[in-house]
Amino acid sequence: MSQQDQLYTTIINDLQKGKLVLPTLPEVALKVREVANNPDVSAAQLAEVITTDAALTARLIKVANSPLYRGRVEVESVQTAVSRLGISMVRNLVTSLVMEQMFRPTNKKLEKRMRDLWQHSIEVAAASQVIASKQPHIANDEAMLAGLIHEIGALPILMKAADTPELLDDTRRLDTLIDNLYPKIGEAILRSWDFPENLVTVAAEHANLNRNSQNGPDLTDVVQVANLQSYFNTNKALAPNTRDKVLAFRKLGIDTGISVVELDENSEEYAAALALFQNI
Image 1 (cartoon, rainbow, N blue to C red):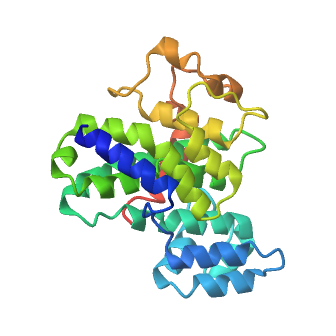
Image 2 (image 1 turned 45 degrees about the horizontal axis):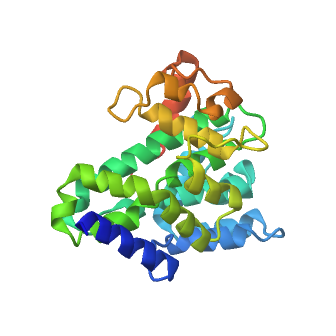
Image 3 (image 1 turned 90 degrees about the horizontal axis):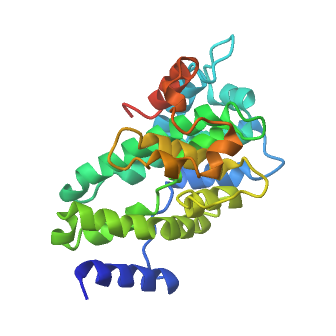
């Protein structure tokens, strides 16, 4: 059995037995999600939790004043930001804003891998936000978060591969291993975080090109298209005839040959969404 097969078997067995070490959300994000899920929570109560983290406080106020969310009056406090944006949106934004911490490598050899994975994730998140903004029943902030977490299942695989240097150095073999495993592991991670089912489905199903959403277009359709478009002009791009068969494009009313972020009407919105996660 090859090292790749051994690692695959080990990860699957650990996952099935509940022994696979899954990443955990930063404590402040867990607390914010817990408090925000209380239907009786007030803006002041949620703001009190957020302000325990000075860096998050500053970033949330900055986001509230960004081109994507700003109003006529500048936001100067977290409570005002929560009141303006709404509790549900703040919950998703806070989770998104702390997500980058999970992509910081603990192993020197993982630096480029982690950096590339984070860059890909924020590009898909930004594109998902743009696509969702054209769909009346899909929240932009939830689509952005969905884009960020769509490949979260790759993290435990990379951590395992770090213990097998020859596999870490073999890009093709490691890519194959990640492609085969990350959706299943991503699903397990989001269930462990108690995320809603529509986000769990994004991690589990966005790579399924034969998927046909029952009540589409849905959140997974959005991320699937954003992810496939992120590969345009790369060696991961699908052949046009294969892309034409992906139902998500049709359900969203998107041309399979044109990236939404290349359209002039979307370019500023995409840039603004991308800027939220750059230079953190």
